[in-house]
Amino acid sequence: MLYYVVKYLILVIAKIIFRVEVNGIEHIPKKGPCILCFSHRSLLDPPVLGVFMPRQLAFMAKEELFRIPVLGFLIRKLGSFPVKRGTGDLGAIKTAIRILNKGNALAMFPEGTRVKAGEDKKAKPGVALIATKAKVPVIPIGANGKYKLFRKLKINIGEPVILEEYYNQKLPMEKLQEISNHILKKIKMLMEVG
Image (cartoon, rainbow, N blue to C red; front, side, top):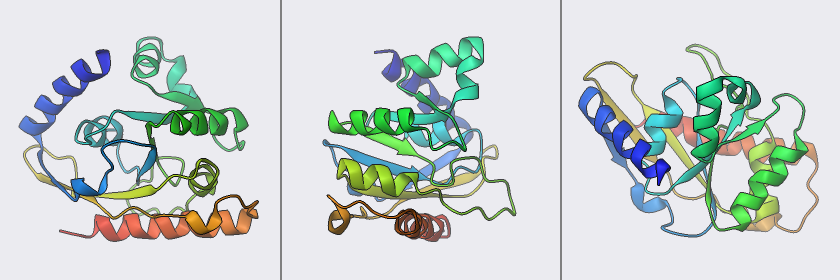
């Protein structure tokens, strides 16, 4: 209930201050587990991109956010869970797989952190690891535009990336990295669609 109240409020605000256009919404399955994969460029990405998606999303978020009194309480209530960055957090990976095994949608940022303008970060292997272990499709999503008042922001949703050929395999880290890089490349292409 809280999720939908907050989603509606943010949606109304976002529609007023940003001219958001969403393309490719049909690529997001109406039900069943999936990973929605965004490139994280702004602090506004999780709330704005999240409210324009047709599914309730569980976000993997850096654990430091959960220590901020009101924010930590709120994001946990909205379905986010903490990840210790830079450690290969096994607990967060298990939580992500558990969420997907329940048939829910998970939101992930392939670089594992926010990417500032001009930076070019590589993807982390986590997206590929979780997708292949949970046997779920990854939907690449790219936002074209900046969060500026009354400017157009285009959210482009790509076709699902199905990794079925890698299910039930113990993949080396190099292969997981390669798959995650491939997904990030698709996201970057979607960010260029005007």
